Length: 480
Ligand SMILES: Cc1cc2nc3c(=O)[nH]c(=O)nc-3n(C[C@H](O)[C@H](O)[C@H](O)COP(=O)(O)OP(=O)(O)OC[C@H]3O[C@@H](n4cnc5c(N)ncnc54)[C@H](O)[C@@H]3O)c2cc1C
Image (cartoon, rainbow, N blue to C red; front, top):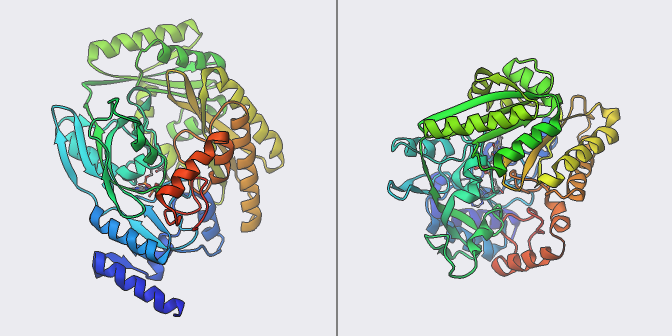
C-alpha cells in the first residue's frame, strides 16, 4: 500500500471519530502545529529551515473520542502528541516524528464548582484565564497564576508541573490538583480517587504530573480553589548584597510568614529587566514581597517580613514599586519588553535547597559567562517560587548576535544548555523547576534520576508498549 493511500485511510478513520470539521491536514495548519514556544524550532523556521510537521491535526470533544483515536494510533503505530495551548517552552508539543496532533481545546467545559469544598472540576483543554473567570464569578480563584494563563490550558498546567506567580503561598499546579481523568495510551479511561490525601495505597496518579503527554492524556481535573483575597499587599525592597536578600527570603518562608510572592532580581536583572519593564534605575538586588488574605493578618505578616529585611540591611522602597511590579508582572514575557529574535535566549531555571542555592547560582553564572564570553553572553536571574526547604533560580542566557546559520546556532544553543544544566546538576539542582522537560531537556533525564531512571522506563513500557505517546520527550525514546 502506498504511504499516500494509507495516510488517507487513517485520515478517514479519524474523521469518522471527530467529524470532518475537526480534522485537518492542510499545509498551513501543519505549519502552525509544528512548533510550540521552544526557541530552537522557532529559530529553525525563522531561518527558513523546514520542521517535521504533524500528519493530522485532530480536535476531539470527549475522553471517549480520544480513547478511539489512541486505539487507531496503536493499530497503525503512529505517534500522538497532546496539544493544549502550545505555549510550552520546552518543545514538549513539537511533533518530532510527525503523527497525530491531538488538540484538546474542545474539552473546555467547567463541570462543577463545589463552593463548600472549594473545588472546581473542569475539562483539561479549558483556557487558563477562562477557567479563572468562571471561578471568579463565585468569588473564588484558582491560585495558579502563570504568565502564560491567557494562552495555556488546565492540562498544560499539570502535564509539565507548572508554577505560577503566587506559588510560594499556594503551591505549584501539581499541589492544587485533587484528582484527574486520564486516557491511557491503550485507550482505557481512568479516574483517580476524588480524595487525594488518603492512605489507601500509593499515590500513583501523580505519575501523570510531569509526564507531558508521554503516559496518557489528561482529560479532566479537579482543582483546589481559594476565596479571592480581601487584600493583596505588595512592597519593594533593595538589597546591596544578594546573599542577604536570599537569607531574607529564606527566613520569610521558614518562619511561615506565608508570603504570596518573593521575587528577588539579581543585580544584573535589576539593572536590565527591571529598568526596561518598570523604568526603575535601582542599583542592587530588587525584591518584591506580597501578602494576601485577611487585611489584619496580611499587614502583620508584612510588618514581620519588613522587620527581618531591615535587620539584613534592606532599604524599604515602599508600596509603589511593589504594586507596579504586580501590575506589569507579565510584561517581562511579551512584546515589546520580552526577549525576541534574532537574539538567542533560554531560561535555564533550576531549583535546590537553601544550602545549595548560592553555590548553584554562582557556578551556573560563572560557567555560562566564562565559556561563552566570546559571544558576549548575558546571564541574568531572579529567584521566585520559594519552598520551605529551598528556592528556584529563574536564570536566563541572552546572546544578541548569535550565528546566522541555523545549524551553527543550534550547536551553540545546545552547548550552552549543556553547560548550564551540568552546573545545576553538579551543585545539587534539578534540570528545572516548572517548565517541564519536553524535547529540550530530554537528554538530561537519565543523569538527573541516576539509578531511579530505569524504573520510569519500565512504567512507560508497561503503559505504552509501542511508544506512541509523544515519542522523543521526557527522556523516553521513539516508537518501539
Ligand atoms: C510567555 C510565556 C510565559 C510563560 N510563563 C509560565 C509560567 O509563569 N509558569 C509556568 O509554569 N510556565 C510558563 N510558561 C510555559 C508554558 O506556558 C506552561 O508550561 C503552560 O502551562 C503550558 O500549557 P499549554 O496548554 O500551552 O501546554 P502545551 O504547550 O500545549 O503542552 C505542554 C506539554 O504538555 C503536554 N500536554 C498538554 N496538554 C496535555 C493534556 N491534556 N494531557 C497530557 N499532556 C498534555 C504536551 O504534549 C506538551 O508536552 C510560559 C510560556 C510562555 C510562552
